[in-house]
Amino acid sequence: MQCIAALHRHLFVLVLFWSQSAFAEFINWEDTKKSLFDAKYEIGAAAGGITYLGVKEWNWGSASFKFNNEGWFGMDTGSGGVDKLGHMYSSYLMAEAISHGLSRHNDPEFAATYSALWATSLMLYVEVFDGYSADHGFSYEDVILNSTGVAFSYLRTRYPRVRELLDYRLDYQPSEGMQGFHPVTDYSGMRYLLVLKAAGVPALRDTPLKYLEFNLGYSARGFKASDAPYIPQRNSELFVGVSFNLNELLFKPFADQLGRAGKFASTVTRYYQPRGSYIKTTVDKRG
Image (cartoon, rainbow, N blue to C red; front, side, top):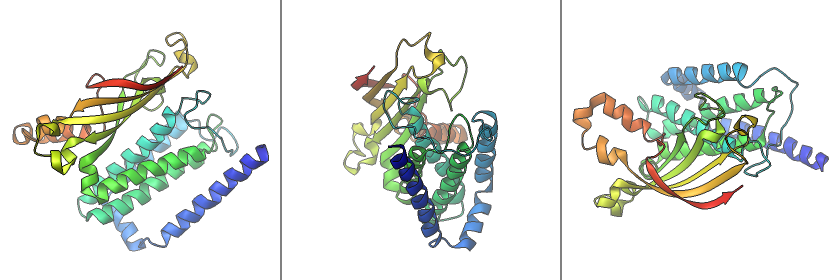
Protein backbone atom coordinates (compact mmCIF):
# COMPACT_ATOMS: atom_id res chain seq x y z
CA MET A 1 0.00 0.00 0.00
CA GLN A 2 2.85 2.39 0.79
CA CYS A 3 4.36 1.73 -2.65
CA ILE A 4 1.02 2.50 -4.30
CA ALA A 5 0.64 5.71 -2.28
CA ALA A 6 4.18 6.76 -3.23
CA LEU A 7 3.44 6.04 -6.90
CA HIS A 8 0.28 8.17 -6.72
CA ARG A 9 2.24 11.05 -5.21
CA HIS A 10 4.93 10.92 -7.88
CA LEU A 11 2.37 10.66 -10.67
CA PHE A 12 0.56 13.65 -9.20
CA VAL A 13 3.75 15.74 -9.19
CA LEU A 14 4.50 14.76 -12.79
CA VAL A 15 0.98 15.74 -13.87
CA LEU A 16 1.27 18.99 -11.90
CA PHE A 17 4.47 20.08 -13.56
CA TRP A 18 3.29 18.89 -16.99
CA SER A 19 0.12 20.98 -16.60
CA GLN A 20 2.22 23.99 -15.55
CA SER A 21 4.37 23.53 -18.68
CA ALA A 22 1.31 23.13 -20.90
CA PHE A 23 -0.25 26.26 -19.40
CA ALA A 24 2.96 28.16 -20.07
CA GLU A 25 2.51 27.61 -23.81
CA PHE A 26 -0.55 29.86 -23.70
CA ILE A 27 1.21 32.64 -21.80
CA ASN A 28 2.60 35.64 -23.60
CA TRP A 29 5.85 36.43 -21.79
CA GLU A 30 5.70 40.11 -22.63
CA ASP A 31 2.28 40.20 -20.99
CA THR A 32 3.70 38.27 -18.04
CA LYS A 33 6.28 41.00 -17.47
CA LYS A 34 3.56 43.62 -17.85
CA SER A 35 1.40 41.84 -15.27
CA LEU A 36 4.32 41.72 -12.83
CA PHE A 37 4.79 45.47 -13.20
CA ASP A 38 1.07 46.29 -12.96
CA ALA A 39 0.58 44.23 -9.78
CA LYS A 40 4.07 44.52 -8.31
CA TYR A 41 2.86 45.68 -4.91
CA GLU A 42 0.32 42.88 -4.51
CA ILE A 43 2.72 40.20 -5.76
CA GLY A 44 5.61 41.55 -3.69
CA ALA A 45 3.49 41.73 -0.52
CA ALA A 46 2.24 38.19 -1.05
CA ALA A 47 5.74 36.80 -1.67
CA GLY A 48 7.16 38.63 1.34
CA GLY A 49 4.34 37.55 3.64
CA ILE A 50 4.62 33.94 2.52
CA THR A 51 8.38 33.86 3.11
CA TYR A 52 8.05 35.41 6.55
CA LEU A 53 5.38 32.91 7.62
CA GLY A 54 7.31 30.01 6.10
CA VAL A 55 10.41 30.74 8.13
CA LYS A 56 8.70 31.90 11.35
CA GLU A 57 5.57 29.75 11.55
CA TRP A 58 5.89 26.82 9.14
CA ASN A 59 9.40 25.68 10.04
CA TRP A 60 10.79 25.73 6.50
CA GLY A 61 14.24 24.19 6.15
CA SER A 62 13.90 21.93 9.18
CA ALA A 63 13.90 18.62 7.27
CA SER A 64 14.71 16.92 4.00
CA PHE A 65 12.05 17.08 1.31
CA LYS A 66 9.11 14.77 1.94
CA PHE A 67 5.56 14.16 0.81
CA ASN A 68 2.75 14.15 3.35
CA ASN A 69 -0.59 12.44 2.79
CA GLU A 70 -2.77 14.67 4.99
CA GLY A 71 -6.20 13.35 4.08
CA TRP A 72 -9.29 15.45 3.50
CA PHE A 73 -12.14 15.99 6.00
CA GLY A 74 -11.85 12.89 8.16
CA MET A 75 -11.98 13.00 11.94
CA ASP A 76 -8.55 11.34 12.02
CA THR A 77 -6.89 14.22 10.12
CA GLY A 78 -4.95 17.14 11.58
CA SER A 79 -7.82 19.64 11.55
CA GLY A 80 -10.91 17.94 10.15
CA GLY A 81 -10.29 19.58 6.78
CA VAL A 82 -10.41 23.20 7.94
CA ASP A 83 -6.77 23.61 6.88
CA LYS A 84 -7.77 22.49 3.38
CA LEU A 85 -10.48 25.12 3.17
CA GLY A 86 -7.88 27.56 4.50
CA HIS A 87 -5.60 26.73 1.58
CA MET A 88 -8.48 27.32 -0.80
CA TYR A 89 -9.27 30.64 0.89
CA SER A 90 -5.63 31.83 0.96
CA SER A 91 -5.10 31.10 -2.73
CA TYR A 92 -8.46 32.66 -3.57
CA LEU A 93 -7.68 35.80 -1.56
CA MET A 94 -4.23 36.08 -3.12
CA ALA A 95 -5.63 35.75 -6.64
CA GLU A 96 -8.31 38.33 -5.83
CA ALA A 97 -5.73 40.83 -4.57
CA ILE A 98 -3.51 40.40 -7.63
CA SER A 99 -6.54 40.59 -9.90
CA HIS A 100 -7.52 43.86 -8.24
CA GLY A 101 -4.07 45.27 -9.01
CA LEU A 102 -4.19 44.11 -12.62
CA SER A 103 -7.75 45.36 -13.19
CA ARG A 104 -6.63 48.97 -12.75
CA HIS A 105 -4.96 48.96 -16.20
CA ASN A 106 -6.19 45.81 -17.97
CA ASP A 107 -9.34 44.08 -19.15
CA PRO A 108 -10.99 41.27 -17.12
CA GLU A 109 -9.58 38.46 -19.29
CA PHE A 110 -6.01 39.68 -18.80
CA ALA A 111 -6.53 40.24 -15.07
CA ALA A 112 -8.12 36.81 -14.60
CA THR A 113 -5.42 34.95 -16.54
CA TYR A 114 -2.37 36.57 -14.96
CA SER A 115 -3.73 36.74 -11.43
CA ALA A 116 -4.30 32.98 -11.74
CA LEU A 117 -0.74 32.50 -13.03
CA TRP A 118 0.87 34.47 -10.20
CA ALA A 119 -1.33 33.08 -7.42
CA THR A 120 -0.74 29.50 -8.61
CA SER A 121 3.01 30.10 -8.74
CA LEU A 122 3.09 31.63 -5.26
CA MET A 123 1.04 28.84 -3.71
CA LEU A 124 3.23 26.24 -5.42
CA TYR A 125 6.20 28.03 -3.85
CA VAL A 126 4.50 27.55 -0.47
CA GLU A 127 3.93 23.86 -1.06
CA VAL A 128 7.41 23.09 -2.34
CA PHE A 129 9.03 24.67 0.72
CA ASP A 130 6.46 23.01 2.99
CA GLY A 131 8.09 19.86 1.66
CA TYR A 132 11.24 20.90 3.56
CA SER A 133 9.37 21.37 6.86
CA ALA A 134 9.39 18.75 9.62
CA ASP A 135 5.88 19.91 10.54
CA HIS A 136 4.30 19.71 7.10
CA GLY A 137 5.55 18.17 3.86
CA PHE A 138 4.41 18.51 0.27
CA SER A 139 0.68 17.74 0.20
CA TYR A 140 -1.15 17.04 -3.05
CA GLU A 141 -4.44 17.70 -1.21
CA ASP A 142 -3.23 21.25 -0.53
CA VAL A 143 -2.28 21.76 -4.17
CA ILE A 144 -5.74 20.66 -5.32
CA LEU A 145 -7.48 23.08 -2.94
CA ASN A 146 -5.03 25.86 -3.86
CA SER A 147 -5.98 25.36 -7.50
CA THR A 148 -9.67 25.36 -6.60
CA GLY A 149 -9.35 28.73 -4.86
CA VAL A 150 -7.47 30.23 -7.80
CA ALA A 151 -10.03 28.83 -10.25
CA PHE A 152 -12.89 30.38 -8.28
CA SER A 153 -11.19 33.77 -8.33
CA TYR A 154 -10.53 33.39 -12.07
CA LEU A 155 -14.25 32.82 -12.71
CA ARG A 156 -15.24 35.81 -10.57
CA THR A 157 -12.79 38.10 -12.39
CA ARG A 158 -13.47 36.80 -15.88
CA TYR A 159 -17.26 36.68 -15.52
CA PRO A 160 -18.77 39.55 -13.47
CA ARG A 161 -22.07 37.69 -13.04
CA VAL A 162 -20.25 35.03 -11.00
CA ARG A 163 -18.81 37.77 -8.78
CA GLU A 164 -22.29 39.23 -8.32
CA LEU A 165 -23.67 35.82 -7.36
CA LEU A 166 -21.04 34.06 -5.21
CA ASP A 167 -18.56 34.90 -2.44
CA TYR A 168 -16.22 32.73 -0.38
CA ARG A 169 -15.77 34.11 3.13
CA LEU A 170 -13.98 33.46 6.39
CA ASP A 171 -15.61 33.85 9.79
CA TYR A 172 -12.83 33.92 12.39
CA GLN A 173 -13.09 34.32 16.14
CA PRO A 174 -10.02 33.41 18.24
CA SER A 175 -10.45 30.08 20.02
CA GLU A 176 -9.75 29.63 23.69
CA GLY A 177 -6.84 27.24 23.21
CA MET A 178 -4.74 29.47 20.96
CA GLN A 179 -4.90 32.41 23.41
CA GLY A 180 -4.49 35.21 20.92
CA PHE A 181 -5.16 36.34 17.37
CA HIS A 182 -3.90 33.65 14.94
CA PRO A 183 -6.05 33.85 11.77
CA VAL A 184 -3.74 31.56 9.79
CA THR A 185 -3.32 28.61 12.18
CA ASP A 186 -6.21 28.83 14.65
CA TYR A 187 -8.38 26.23 12.94
CA SER A 188 -10.84 25.86 15.83
CA GLY A 189 -11.74 29.53 15.49
CA MET A 190 -12.52 29.36 11.78
CA ARG A 191 -15.66 28.87 9.77
CA TYR A 192 -15.64 28.97 5.98
CA LEU A 193 -18.76 29.96 4.07
CA LEU A 194 -19.76 29.77 0.43
CA VAL A 195 -22.28 32.58 0.00
CA LEU A 196 -25.04 32.80 -2.61
CA LYS A 197 -26.23 36.40 -2.99
CA ALA A 198 -29.85 36.81 -4.04
CA ALA A 199 -28.94 40.19 -5.56
CA GLY A 200 -26.90 38.29 -8.15
CA VAL A 201 -29.99 36.50 -9.45
CA PRO A 202 -31.54 38.70 -12.19
CA ALA A 203 -35.11 37.77 -11.24
CA LEU A 204 -34.52 38.82 -7.61
CA ARG A 205 -32.38 41.90 -8.18
CA ASP A 206 -35.28 44.36 -7.90
CA THR A 207 -37.13 42.61 -5.09
CA PRO A 208 -36.72 42.76 -1.28
CA LEU A 209 -34.99 39.38 -1.47
CA LYS A 210 -31.89 41.13 -2.84
CA TYR A 211 -30.96 41.95 0.75
CA LEU A 212 -30.58 38.26 1.63
CA GLU A 213 -27.69 35.82 1.31
CA PHE A 214 -27.73 32.05 1.66
CA ASN A 215 -24.71 30.34 3.18
CA LEU A 216 -23.17 26.88 3.16
CA GLY A 217 -20.53 26.62 5.88
CA TYR A 218 -18.12 24.24 7.59
CA SER A 219 -16.12 24.27 10.81
CA ALA A 220 -14.13 21.78 12.90
CA ARG A 221 -12.88 22.16 16.48
CA GLY A 222 -10.79 20.34 19.02
CA PHE A 223 -8.10 18.88 16.76
CA LYS A 224 -5.09 20.60 18.37
CA ALA A 225 -3.55 19.66 21.71
CA SER A 226 -4.07 23.25 22.88
CA ASP A 227 -7.85 22.78 22.43
CA ALA A 228 -8.05 19.94 24.97
CA PRO A 229 -8.81 21.97 28.12
CA TYR A 230 -11.62 23.85 26.35
CA ILE A 231 -13.07 21.43 23.79
CA PRO A 232 -13.58 17.90 25.19
CA GLN A 233 -13.54 16.07 21.86
CA ARG A 234 -13.05 16.60 18.16
CA ASN A 235 -16.15 17.75 16.33
CA SER A 236 -17.13 19.19 12.97
CA GLU A 237 -20.23 20.92 11.64
CA LEU A 238 -21.68 21.38 8.16
CA PHE A 239 -24.34 24.07 8.24
CA VAL A 240 -26.58 26.28 6.14
CA GLY A 241 -27.48 29.83 7.04
CA VAL A 242 -29.02 33.15 6.08
CA SER A 243 -27.40 36.59 6.34
CA PHE A 244 -28.02 40.12 5.14
CA ASN A 245 -26.17 41.47 2.12
CA LEU A 246 -24.49 44.47 3.76
CA ASN A 247 -23.38 45.84 0.40
CA GLU A 248 -26.97 46.07 -0.79
CA LEU A 249 -28.29 47.17 2.60
CA LEU A 250 -25.70 49.82 3.53
CA PHE A 251 -22.85 50.45 1.17
CA LYS A 252 -24.61 50.86 -2.18
CA PRO A 253 -27.42 53.16 -0.97
CA PHE A 254 -25.02 55.35 1.06
CA ALA A 255 -21.94 55.19 -1.16
CA ASP A 256 -21.67 58.98 -1.51
CA GLN A 257 -21.97 59.63 2.21
CA LEU A 258 -19.58 56.83 3.25
CA GLY A 259 -16.90 57.63 0.66
CA ARG A 260 -13.65 55.65 0.64
CA ALA A 261 -14.27 54.19 4.09
CA GLY A 262 -17.55 52.73 2.87
CA LYS A 263 -15.91 51.33 -0.23
CA PHE A 264 -13.23 49.64 1.88
CA ALA A 265 -15.80 48.22 4.31
CA SER A 266 -17.86 46.95 1.39
CA THR A 267 -14.83 45.11 0.02
CA VAL A 268 -14.05 43.55 3.40
CA THR A 269 -17.58 42.15 3.74
CA ARG A 270 -17.11 40.22 0.50
CA TYR A 271 -14.32 38.19 2.09
CA TYR A 272 -15.05 38.26 5.83
CA GLN A 273 -18.24 37.20 7.60
CA PRO A 274 -18.42 38.50 11.21
CA ARG A 275 -19.45 35.97 13.85
CA GLY A 276 -23.08 36.53 14.79
CA SER A 277 -23.98 38.24 11.52
CA TYR A 278 -25.88 35.22 10.20
CA ILE A 279 -28.35 32.62 11.39
CA LYS A 280 -27.30 29.01 10.86
CA THR A 281 -28.71 25.54 11.28
CA THR A 282 -26.72 22.31 11.36
CA VAL A 283 -26.98 19.91 8.44
CA ASP A 284 -24.44 17.37 9.68
CA LYS A 285 -22.45 17.17 12.93
CA ARG A 286 -19.69 14.71 13.82
CA GLY A 287 -17.94 14.15 17.10
